[in-house]
Length: 328
Image (cartoon, rainbow, N blue to C red; front, side, top):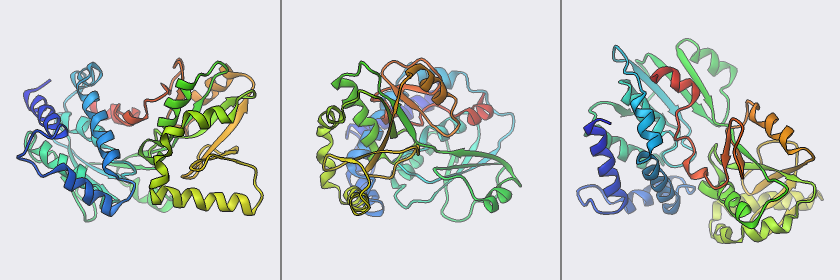
């Protein structure tokens, strides 16, 4: 690892720990982010920074950096993101810059204040590596579109005029095995509720055995009842609760989460879809090959896309497959 990157990591650690008084107060930045987007609470921003800190100090991160292949000539990558969770694309962009690309970043959110702050810090060590733009993206060699929704056909025709990478941020699912325990279900709760479930690494549907007891899940996720205090989340929950009650749609309700059996893979905020299975191995093999799932959370990962319960804080830290083609 080069010295500049090592120094940036040290600086990031100091900021996270509140030790570096030469930088703008992180608490004030969190308040500003929350003002623009109520999903970006201080707790969720700190959650992301803590996960980022663990990852960049890991052997996995060091190994990725060591295998990055520098580009021969300076190329510019235009990068658009929905910014659904705090610092959603930060690691993807760091990997690009470490390969020698210059990144022009544009977010759909004014709440990307924390990203802008870290980008400015990063540029102290790697000048002009990341440029955050508010205007229309222009003058670039590659264009990366990262969004939870596929582009429209009109957008796709425009994008395809360029060297274009489409990264649709599909949501995740989980498979609860027959021999589940309360620890599994509590960790699964984190994968459902971290970042208010807004990220692609958050679980929007669970697959459970036919003998699954819903009350076991509700008991295990009771520590997440702090969501009752978050008005944006509860507005979503209460809206769908009213729809289900008025239309007499079967569901279960614990006061802050609606559990509904549904074929769809992506439940709305405040709702978790579920379905039952009879053959766990066949289901997991099928899900591992599903092209509209980001991750499959399980107790013991074996197949592609599978991740251990409780790891949703770390979503989007590893380089995506399309990105690997640019950096290795």
